[in-house]
Image (tube, rainbow, N blue to C red; front, side):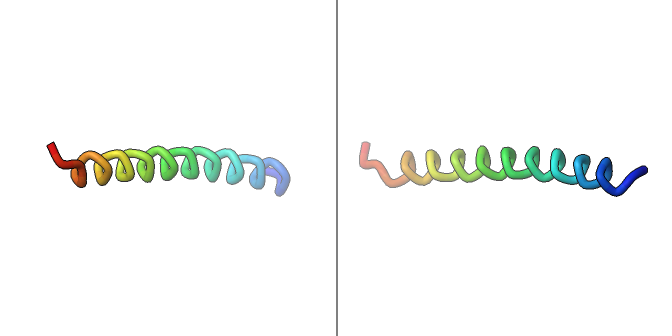
Amino acid sequence: MTEAKRLRTLEEENAKLKKLLAEAMLDIAVLKDISTRKW
């Protein structure tokens, strides 16, 4: 595997992980918001 191809693969994997992290953080923010509301 060439260095450029390896870098591209790592960048794609990194983008996927960043997306997952952003979604998880959003879920946590929503749950915190719901849990602090007074019903």
